[in-house]
Amino acid sequence: MGTNSPSHLRILTVDLEDWFHLIDYGGSADVEGWHRYPSRIQENTAFLLDCFREAGVKATFFSLGWVARNHPGLIQDILREGHEIGSHSDVHEMVRKQSPSGFRSDLRASIRTIEDASGQPVRFFRAPGFSITPECLWAFDILLEEGITCDCSVFPGSHAHGGFAQMVPGGPVRLRVSAGVLHELPVTTRGIGGTQMAFGGGGYFRLLPGALIRYWTQRSPYLMTYFHPRDFDPSQPVLPGLPATRRFKSYVGLARSRSKLKSLLAMGGFCTVSAAHDRIDWERVPMIETLAGTESR
Image (tube, rainbow, N blue to C red; front, side, top):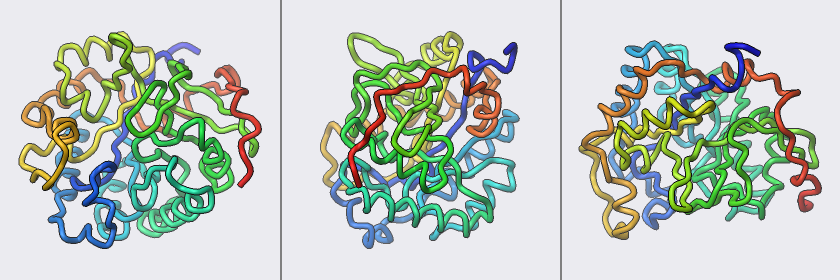
């Protein structure tokens, strides 16, 4: 497949959520109370848009429906820059804690809201916290049934909110489920001491040395990133009552994250989910058959 091979894919994505959208923080569970917190998503996303423009790259932004409802102009700003929009759920609930009907309703709400704000169909999805697990494989069926053609929710290892500990695809895979076949672009990890580190986003990106991230990026035939606007906001407030471990994960490395991002983008070769999807010969991508026969809904 030459230069169009998946072995040359570096996919640039952003989970479009505000600084207070932390899954395991009790204060963020009250959706009606989110307006108590001062929003920082406009300026933080503007920083990312500036970086992407300077680097000459395009990204896929997985937006919460809540963000699209409350900041429709931000969705338009992203589209004007030539980026694309997918769904990151409606109100940032973990899939593994939802019922099938609850997940479907949340997904439909997010798609409807994002499409209203963008004027474009939503075809890509990422679950909050990579929270689709072997216990809720019905989510993949629902994604297909609701028009999602490519999912980016799989974490190939153990994760605080989900993950597939036995699944190590190392790149694109096809998931055979009851509703058909779903194309999957999983997050990229590197194993150290039995721990799978998703170095292309979130806490690990902020924690690990930039030189190591670039080293792994250079040697990764496939890279799926997953940044958040708050990952690059060293001035963001600290949420009250946040447990020490979660506080460390959420705030470590903020002082250096902006320069690390610019250094990473300078390596070049980054593209959107749709561009990556179009470059892949999906007939030659491995099929995972073990997902067939998901539980009834």
